[in-house]
Picture 1: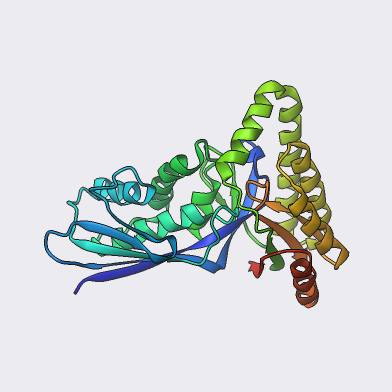
Picture 2 (picture 1 turned 90 degrees about the vertical axis):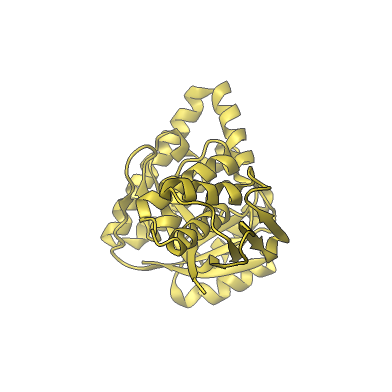
Length: 309
């Protein structure tokens, strides 16, 4: 029996979300503690290619559900490799929360494409995989920045400017982050679409806000590469203020950010689309436990301690 299994991590945006859609730089990192995993195995002759995701209560044939994002992913792989549809079952499992800013859609697509191409004997390289997953991101988000597919497919911290090849982000000194989920689901396309509407009404104001966010991302890149972690906290705080001004923060996020800072975080901000989803906090290793406790007491439905390195 032929089979192949592959995975892809979640992701957090460290600096630059939303502004990255408008040509500004962003920094992001994978979160390997949460993952999407796909396994492909032979099935009965004539069954075609079937995708099953138990945690989504989903089972579909790519022939019958041709417009579903997962079916489109599989079809793009077959077209890219110029392979006929195999008789196989793709099983998907994911521990990445959905609509929480952690790149769930990109990770599931990447795991599926990676597993299917490996099963077919022609594994996609990172650049090919990222390009393919970006096409699926368009289905999820309308006008994606490209950062989710880049981080998830390359599996390493990146410096990213839309329309240019991603650059590896060299981490001069590993640092600890706590991710906390507000429990408020927030599809990225809703937040991105709202920002675009406001930008179209007042481009001068929003372009200035995006430019300042971009400057912060550049300063953060320098600090991370130099291992100067003392600069990161204040940059996160300023980035969060600007994200509030472009209208993507919310009370649930602000409560968690305030709780993290009061518990000793060096800086905190939302991560991803905003309007819910997750926030991130820069923490010293010894303060991670108390900060996670404070976040849960303030309403976080889950926390993840991750190390960017």
